[in-house]
Length: 129
View 1: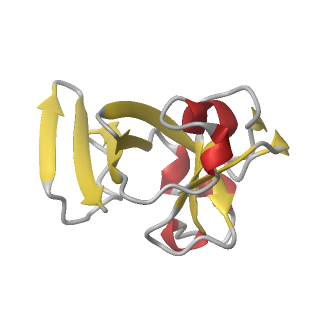
View 2 (view 1 turned 135 degrees about the horizontal axis):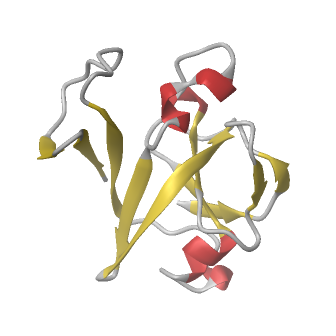
């Protein structure tokens, strides 16, 4: 896991400031549509990251064009919540993605390790190391 501090528009088409907001950029391999603004990742997906007993949950707002599928880039303040920025790269994290959508959204069909039903919404978690 590394961090970045870009400003501008994220892959979801919304303004981001990775130097001041908690967010995550996930690998280009996670994106499934030609136009990332329309990708399901931009509809409520979060990543929960744990390192040294500390856990944060950050929304997917951007794409990492050089990340492998098992690598994430946290925004600068999100990274700092887990480790000093001077570390630069951290290994030994665990992370999982949370997909959340309305029950009527049948477009997402994936196998998930865990799912929780919260009334009108469903949450699904996938774990990575």
